[in-house]
Image (cartoon, rainbow, N blue to C red; front, side, top):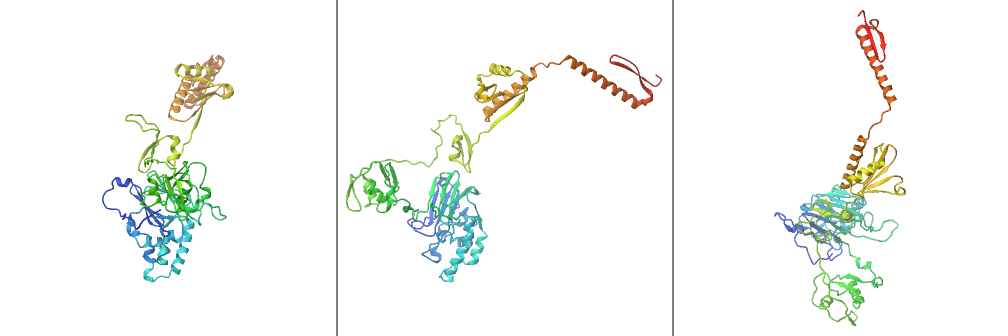
Amino acid sequence: MASTGPPQSLKRSDTSLTREGDQLIITPLGAGNEVGRSCVYMSYKGKTILFDCGIHPAYSGMAALPYFDEIDPSTIDVLLVTHFHLDHAASLPYFLEKTTFKGPVFMTLATKAIYTLLLSDYVKVSKVSVEDMLYDEQDILRSMDKIEVIDFHQTLEVNGIRFWCYTAGHVLGAAMFMVDIAGVRVIYTGDYSREEDRHLRPAEIPQFSPDICIIESTYGVQLISLEMACPMSPSVVMASPSGLQSGLSRQLFEIWCSDKKKACVIPGNVVEGTLAKTIINEPKEVTLMNGITASLNMQSVEMYFNSEKRLAEKTPEVGETVGGLLVKKTFTYQIMAPDDLHVFSQLSTENISQRITIAYTGAFGVLEHRLKQILESVESLPDEESEGPAFRVHERLTMKYESEKHISLHWRSDPISDMVSDFVVALVLNISREIPKVVVESEEATKTEENSKKAEKVVHALLVSLLGDGEVWREWETGDKCRWKCGAS
């Protein structure tokens, strides 16, 4: 991060939000072009976040604080603290107890546990007057009640701002925060370490690619060695500082300037008298730091940047049908291809395979014949592929012969396949009703006789209930008919 002085005032005015709310603004209130008092203010879509809240170790009293007077603390939605070191967390008690900030504060459990111990020692050993003290131990204890804990990979949401954190190495509990506002992802690292350690895991590589990285770069230039910076393949370095007057970028430039496969990108304005200004004019030769003249084999390259995400292969014309999944994020709607969900959102897709078994006693070939009369694509499958008689309907549904009494349908669920399956099920059930029922004659006679005996018992029981057992008796019986005599009648 870089800063040339106190930031422009970021206090929110009372006027209504305009298109300016679509700009993502990142302003270092501390740690800009310096080491200490890490504090980064970010706003987008009317949401505001503060990353870290440290002090400057070289100063004392109010001079050690970040530029809090340039913001309105009451408008900040959430404050995220990466770890417990003083340059990242020591102004937190002051910010919580002596400003108008009322939002939630999040840090990991280990950071919170060590935070109170470290800051208590800081207050005890500070050699400042009572008037210059930023806070006392009571302020630290009260701030503890306002701090909430977040676990690694736990996703939380505050006022439309979604965020989660990854392990950052460095110290116990250190975290890197990924923030999602209206589909735009920003990762803020704080101090991090990728070195293996017996006590701490190295910093994680996030699962989702961020749109913007805010990286602690105090020792960032040490991550690349000059011995590793001379690959045979084409390479690019972003020149920082952009003047190319010194530092690693200058050293790499002097190694690469004669190689056409290499390029140097200057991301910003350049000042007269600097090497960057010189090479923009495309000279044939440049003077190196050791006074030697080297040929410059670089070419002009035009680069264009667009903040919009274009998920489609081409921009649709007016009136053209667009297909895909409609995905709602906090502020916007986007149409995405299913395969792109895991890339541009935190959603994922799953395939649902469905199977249904239907009672059917007719010939299996009848079903295939009837379907071929109605549908265009009905294809028989080889027995070795389907393990029995089967056929495929419109490349979406498979019908299999299971037994003399059952068939089964198999398909991968989607709106069209579900519609095809509903049609096939209705057809099978309709054919089952059309099949004539065959009844054996002997079974029909037996059933009639059983029904007659049941009727006789019912009549006898009814008469007995009305007249008594001694008043009812059977007089004669002929075939399936009988006559009952009641009393003297």
